[in-house]
Image: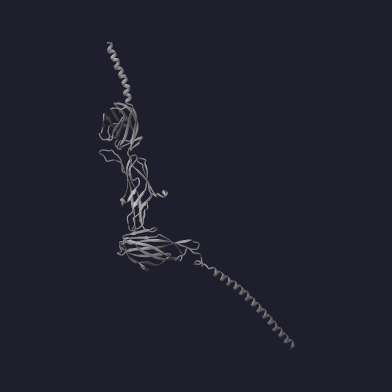
Length: 456
């Protein structure tokens, strides 16, 4: 009897010793919610999360449970989930869908790659960890509906290329970084995006920094645009830059995801023209011209332009406060509309001679005068016009600029003025002397007549 009692005490002691050890093995050190490589304080529906459970010792069974706090009337994808690791096997216990094969165990750390449906009810959920059948972790966690969005701030980019020569444009200025031009983007949603920046035309000729890869929630990026031009004739065109984000790892079976892939755009305006020239375009005709010229009243001015295209076109001009003297084309001067046969391979040079025929009003520094040029295709199928503005400055009152005299001329004028004054003085002195002599003569004649009367 005594031997049996001793054996019973030994068994009870072993059980008592074993229970604390098993409880210690089952304790949870930490639970981390990771999305896109970044720890999170919330769960986003439809997105795979790495929920990492770290124990102080290994366990044969670990179960992760999630459900809407406050209970639910019907068990479904909108309200509750259960995933487990059991002796090397991973399972989605309820739906056999919301667990990824990347789930793995590393020593005492169990990585559950799981998701809840994108249509799951937003709000506070209860998250529970059971280790070998015992609940070791229970905490509330916010669940959000997935939202995808991109915010952008972008200027219009203006690459400028010289005609018929390949060129490169880069909005990043390595020599003067402060003069660089960039666009800025931010992932304002709560889901990671696969970001792609492309172009609706000539996509192979463009490249954009930071324009691909995973775009995490809250992440901000700066982008610079590079453009490799071809050997083009003069032209001007606009290309749309497209910023597109595709939500990553959206898990929603049997339904179409409610997450809309966000997209936004910006403009790249490419100008192929000579330096300082603008572009006017119409069907089959491109003109390089200057919008502004400075000049002065009564001054002659030459307006230059270059025409290319694949049509024949008439060119004529009208002016306001200017006089159009002639249009020179191929060494000939014309006053009537001229007909030109154009080619995209050769620039036709045209020079227009004008005179600024209107003066600014008194006390007005300048006026604006205009030269309007009209184009009409030879087959009369299209017309167009463009304008050059001339800033006409005033000149000093008197009509013309005062002459600038040489020093010798100034001296000669002074000498002539001096002799003129002397001559005037001498002339007046001579006239005075003659008047005195006339008075004396008249006095003698009077006296002689007086004496004659007395003798009678």
